[in-house]
Length: 402
Image (cartoon, rainbow, N blue to C red; front, side, top):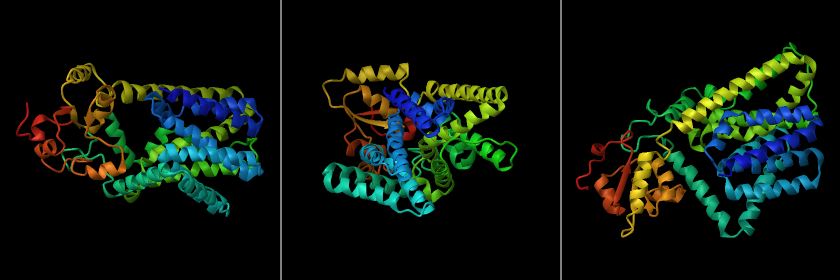
């Protein structure tokens, strides 16, 4: 429920950072508008995903790190250290994005400081943070190994050779597109990438002449940040053996900050040079994004019956909550059905997000590899909840059920 709040904090930080770098109020406003209208970020905030907190913590660590490398101000380094330690304990994918960035920055700037910062803090947390971070890091590595071995978690839970990209599920279709056409998918997730590429194309060809007010060294750093994560996202989606590193589009969520600042700075200059012409073009682009975001919210959130609680599902939840004389042990298919249900039902579910847990449940995750009667007996399941649009009762092949 706090996702929009964290998102607003991120946008405010983008506003302040743009103002610090450019001393231009118009640039800061434009940067904030851009940050508010990135489809993938808006959708994450709309579904109340805690990942929006990771954006804020990521920016609070990586931007001050760049500012420290630029200015040498130790206050920036202290802020970066604190935020990065929080990130280590809270958001695994953000740490992976951070890792790719420090490698690229160390190579391009021929400065091992970035990689040293990353590794030194992990080592310090491991040594002085007690057992807590060792457990988190171990689970992170085990999860990556699980995805490396069984990376295609989109396989149908029962129809072993069938992917979950059927025509009835809009989200599954989007996942399918992400691998078939990663470039289009990435650009659709964040159309402002198209804007920055078009802008740089016009500047290189000298069809327009505008300037940005960001100090040149910081401007270069922000561009490295942007294009590193774009390339990482495309490589992960394009190369099958890299799919285990996560959903590629998630990486571009962490480049909202530099992209908004760079475009905000240029936007202010374009407004000064081209006046109403730029205003009209910018307004049309913004309007098209707003309409696109509303459409996505309708398709991905409002119309998504598989991952939300419908009236029929509420009836099931209320029924399960009346069964107080027995310990509920639930099996769900699809597994995504378990998240909303277990939030309101007291009992145990045959589900896990833990890397070690997935290894222990290899006979049911990501696909059921043993007869359902064995699953019921082995895990003492007393209730099975399925979405018949996903799997039929006949497909379960249960010999004994009520």
